[in-house]
Image 1 (cartoon, rainbow, N blue to C red):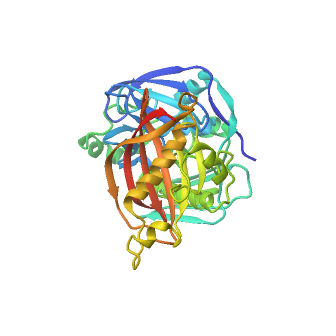
Image 2 (tube, rainbow, N blue to C red):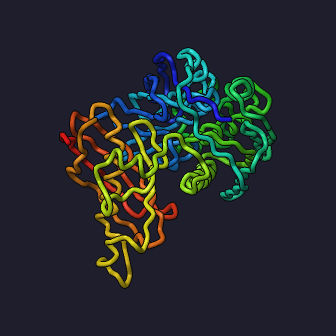
Image 3 (cartoon, rainbow, N blue to C red):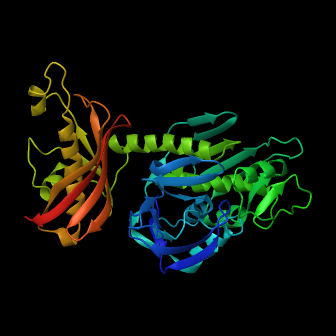
Length: 430
């Protein structure tokens, strides 16, 4: 049984120093509508670029979670995301005037208190849930992650830790994740490093904001831990934060051995593949989906130029996902390389534009208008689309200014990107 989505009742703010950069940053959390997700906004940059907290924007960096979009990044966000996931806060706009999130005391506890201050409220939409039905295994060196089907309603977590220092003892920690258990067992566990790593980390330019108060130094006799197995608990805290990049709640049992942020990201990517397969296969019922009858009511296009068969996901006015089943009966195959049929790249772009137009026409201020494609930018055609393929279309609104709207779009076949572009529309009277 899925729960209702949640956001905050009132905006809240926090300032602090980044754990790695040592730079001051101010953060403001704002309520967001249903299906918005958590989105970071860099208010210190021109046009305030936005970066959704999703694995699509994950960028591999050492010892922290970083998201990148068009050269703009936010980093060390995992403790904050863990707090949001642990307290089941799903929709937020997170304004930041710098690239690195405050390190606070090195744990998620300050962010738990911040979210509690903002007061979580329920919204009129259910969360998306991935119920794992088959085992998933990822390995990276000696780090492994195993996700198994589970009969329980909650996420079951276990971490097995061992460290590359014979003087530092490993450990095992297990738990069932609920808001209560997160606060009691994980939230206050601080980030850590080995005493033998300190000089190398400093030489790499990391840990400029680290202190003995916000970082546990394993192997240092002067270090006092807050909790038994604090470092092992913190590894689970990081995992909870990284799992939130899936964009859905997970019902499964996860066993982690020596895993870190990069291995966590590999698992989330695999889980996203399963989530997409379930959605496109019709195994996940989405109230936000639309069949062809509903699509025809919204779009003026008709056969043979209507290139969307079904909308499988709509996130408010921000993002939509649809599918186009490509068959040999498509009229364009009669003349476009009949001996080796390929869907024309311009029609792939048209399909993405139609989905973007449908998303825009959901907005009240654009009712009675048409979304006319005005320009294309950053167009890339990466692979052929042939009869029998299912073309997955994804569009996301990136900027709205009056009657002009910019969208990011891409098409995928078998989870591989075959086309992508930035689409610019102008809204005209129908």
